[in-house]
Each structure stands twice: as C-alpha cells, then as structure tokens.
Image (cartoon, rainbow, N blue to C red; front, side, top):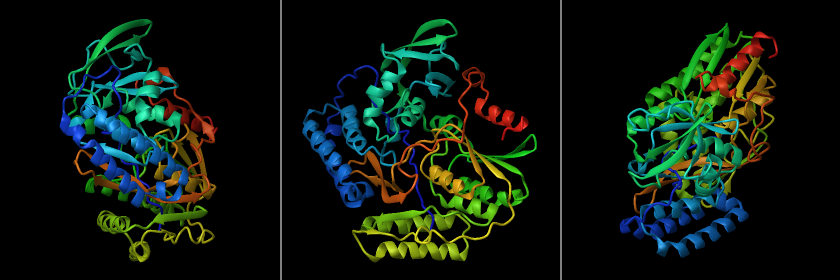
Length: 478
C-alpha cells in the first residue's frame, strides 16, 4: 500500500489584514470560539498523529490552547474568532494541519501575486473582481499600510499559518495571503504602493467577497495549473502534472490518462515531468505511473505508523470506497487496500504499521522497457505526495531534479479531511500517520540543477524556468 499524503487547499484559511480592522459586533462568532477550540483540541489529541507521536508538539499545542482559551473572553467578532482558532493550529507548525472556513467569508482585492526571486509582483487581475485600473500585471508591490510585502507576510500572515519551512511559506502566501484572505472586513480599503518601471504610484485596494467561480478560475490558472497535460516540445515528451488529488470524476479521468499514457513512452530517451505547484494528494497515482514506465515503484526505506483511533479507521474505510470508485484498480490492488483497512481496524488507539509496502523495503521487480532519463521540474509548490514522489524517483537512479527546491513536509501525513467544528464555521484537516523515512520531514528537497526565475521574462508572461530547461536540452547540457 502506498502512502496517501494529501494537501488540503488553504484558500479559505487566510490571515490578518494590513490595517487594524474595526471591531466586529458579531457576538455569535465569539460565542463559538471556546466550544470550537475545545472541539479542535480534543479531536487532535484523540486522532492526530502529531500529538500522539511527538511529545514536543503536544506540549506546544497544550500551551497554545491554554493561551487561546485565556484570550477568548476578549473576542469582539468574526476576525477575532478566525485568528483565535488559526493561531492555535499554527502552533503545530505542520502545513498538513489546516482549517477551511466558510467560503463566503473569503475576501479579495482582485489582484493575484507571485514571489519572484525575493520580490513580489502582480501576475494577473482576477476576473469579476474590481481593482484599481492603474494597477496592472507586472507591477511590483512596494508596500501596503507602510509595510513591505515581506514584513506583512512575516508579521501578519505567517503567525496564523502552520508552516514548516519559512521560505516555502513566503512563496505560497504571496499567492494567497497577500490579497486573498478571510479575516478582513468587506469594503475595507488598504493603501498600497506599487512600482511600474521606475515610477512608484499609490492605489487603494478594496476588499470584497470572492465569487466561487472566480476563485476556481484563479486557483486553476495561477496556483495549481492543468491536472494533466501531455505535449511534445521540440520532440521531447513534456508532461505537466499538477495534483495527486482529483476533485471530480473528470479530474480522476485525467489522472487515469496520466497513468496509462506513460506506457507509450518506454522507448523515449528523455521524459520531462513538470510537477511545479503539485500540492499532493493520493500518491498511489505516482506509484502506478512509475510502475507503468519502468515496471516497479521503488520502496522508500523506513516505516509508516498509523494512529488507529476508531474515527480514523472509519475515515480510511470511507476513503477506500471513494478511491475504488475513481480509479481503475487491479484486483490485487483492491485486495491490498482492503487488507490495509482491516489492519487499521484491528487494534484501536495505538500506532500500527499497516503499510505492507514499507514492511518489505528490499522487495523489487526487474525494470522493464524504459532505460532513458526523467527530468523532473519542481518548485516550492511541490508538497506532500509530490515530495514523496520526488524521493521515490530518486531511488530509480533515472531522475534529475531541476528548478527550485520543493516545499517542506513534516514527517506527518495521510490527511483526514472535513471534520466540522460544532459551530459549522470551519472544517478541520489533520494527519493520521507519521513517516519514519529518510528525507521526509527534514526540509525542502533541493534540485540537482537549480534554475531561478528570470524576472524580466516572467513579467512578459514567459515561463522562464521552462525556457531554461529547453535551452539546456538544446545545448546538450541535460
């Protein structure tokens, strides 16, 4: 059984506003702060691998819980509610541990941002949302409320986010934390400065509710990218693959194509696999892809321990049924899954080693077909199962990693999603597994050949990293 580590999208988990928000009179939100904190804390103590495995994490979480419970009586409204529960979650320092709020709470300014070599630029205007006409794609953000972007992220955004690696977090929250968040008041304005060429100009950005359709367009265009795309560029197979987590039958169908199409590439000398922005999901998809290419999927040496609470066992059983419905699995794969779930249900409230693949790290199959090379392109958006796949590809001896370093997972994964708080305001997502595997939870996975952004090309809408890879291929440097 392969690891199944998922990154739950955090677009509804935004952070603090630049300017001090006016007191929110919504007492209904504050009345739910203490009950929700109690519920979240109890759920994590009973079911998360974080607390059960790490005494250090448990101590930090307990201290944060006490602090938030003590501060809760001072709550004045929705924003204080959001910050209270998020500050507690942030104490775990695990980006797999997240809260998703009511989508109607999300506010935006209409600007999509990107971090390029330490600078922050507008990459697009989000359709359907008003933003000042003088601000255009390519403009550099200088400051908002007198604070530069880095200061805003470090002092007002990241304190409310459970990030593990700071550099990766700055990359991620440039896209959503700067101008897409939940704890702002609709209609509130933020005075910002932008740079266009050598000219600096001011603009007032107005926060407004984000339409669900426009948010989806934003995510697909500027955050995740295509689920699966195959093309030949100058004769080289180029695969763009942005998720292990299909959201609907159509996306599951695309991942099935991703798995099956690679059988046709066994005779290629080079395959480019572009996994930038791949936030993870069910890593079985990657294992099946690799099996179809080289005949087997290398086993990551180590152990995977599952916290087998009754609630977690029920969740695994539900996930298994969903996965059976969306993926074309062989009878043996289905049998393995059933055995995996039976193992989890066998002994409650303990750590179990039910992943049979990890119990036999020496088991291998002879390679079949493919004797070429895999050029893997990554960036700080590669997270969770994407990182798992990078480690697996390294074991083949056929892969060269290019581009930017990945994000950084903790040693925890296998996410249980959608646990509703008593108020219904938020849904909790948390890890059920700890991975005692070399390379996991030890920081970003750095490329063999680093390629930075070319800011000038990026601001022209050119994918500079892709162009650099192609240039190296033409020059025989890869």
